[in-house]
Image (cartoon, rainbow, N blue to C red; front, side):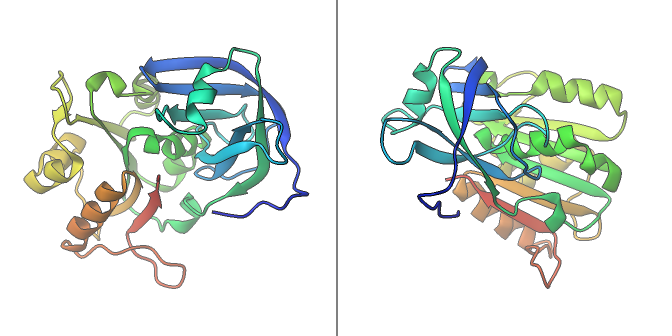
Length: 253
């Protein structure tokens, strides 16, 4: 995270549209002058309550750099900000701080045969930005997008990913998982279980090995810890600036 100074500027945006994927899960589309950021980074989004600073928190941007801002957000009942965001009418004013933060970008990731995007919940957002920006397809032979949710109806951006797969045959593969209910074409288990029993790689038609893969993990802290441990058993290690590895991580809360 980064600290904001009192003199730092905030930009005004308007809520253009909101797509509700499931109860308490939505994509917010904003109108305004898009700040500069790299795919995978976050911006602070907030509402003005008449205080010296807006009530805000950082959210990974789902839109591609240069495109109208898009944020993928889950409502946290009892939270300070998200209930206010979900209660906003279309056209309402929102505040965005233009200074992007975070290093969860492809700039930290070495080249490999297969790039794995592994997410839970709204941890999918930075991967959507990267896919829309297009760099994964320039640097990697194929991309595997893994999305794990509780209920199948919470799977998001599926149509867009399907369209991208149709436009780029053989370049992208989706693997969707749900932990609370089964559905056709969806693995009914956690990511860790699917990795352990081999069904994750079978569904992806790709292997997770140090020789073939780079892995980006974003979402639930427990998933991040457990997957890093499991990948470590295969000889995969975290990417560091002075010591390239195979795993890049972004905690989402």
